[in-house]
Image (cartoon, rainbow, N blue to C red; front, side):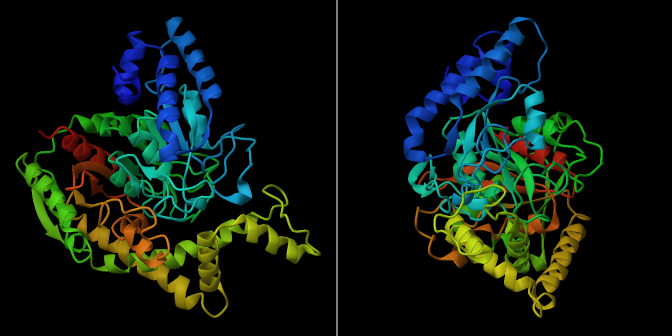
Length: 478
């Protein structure tokens, strides 16, 4: 039995049956990191000592007969955008290379209360800006299925760590597709939650009206287990909803017969690789045999989603990154400034990478006097139309099913010098983000080169249960 390849459910059952200890489980993951991470580069920081200490604490509690949560003693990898008290949190940026936060993000607190064993902090695109984890000051994260290809982004390290069996589950963030796309590229499950379902407190902001927190796991059942802990109202994040959190495990046992799934024609058109679209359609045909109804639908404003995102997201990013001045915290500039203006220029010039600078300039321009109405305000009006598109279509269908990405993982360096091509890799994930609705990425096939293909299940606001219900059915298709 290879412990580091277990699901959460299998690991939890083994721990309770005393077939192995949390320490043995943790050491198996640390061994995998030692063996493979030199070629994959999934981690920025590995906290082996802290992980083993936490695992031993869980083992003592289990030995004493204490009833513990399903996540107790299960090793997790955490994207390096979450504040983790006492463990550096860099956002993969030079300006925060040595920053050690004095407090935990809310979701880290919640997991610690359940007995979390954090194996380390994972690589990402700098400040979560990117679709390939190539924009990191710690180097690119490579795909475990083929190290010549990217792992996706911006949560590429978290997806790769799980796919390479270096953790049992992992955490990421999804602003325009940063959980779903790397999950698809790496062949694991990843959930983007409804905006406001999970607290963002203590997680460095990219675009405040878009950012969401979510899990990666090996199956839908594990996704439900993690979400149950993360979801809910948080007094530190006023955007979190007071809406009651259901028991997500209940959805896994529900029959999918009679559900109506919509196939949005815009997600299967020009630019989508034939192997990808055929893989999704073949899986839908299998679902039809299980008693599902399938209906073709249209989301006409989908074609504007990328444009909306790359106006509003940089605008919010430029405002959020104003706080990084290298005065209160962050790397001080190496060149001695003569005044404060020069200090800011030097600190940010040295501390921000090229992609961050590009997006700050776009965002600042979009918010500047004379251009706010023409760009940001107009984009937000179109975003409202995208939201209305989804509301209308969900009157006729229970969920939408589509590819996660127009293509499988591309080669390292293939798009890094072509920002527009890179931005289009999120063309099928951004619409759900614009609408603030949940979407689950489920691996359903591989292309002729053995690279994973993910299916995206999209549901109405706060209906993560529908995603889990259909995702679990997909996991169990023969």
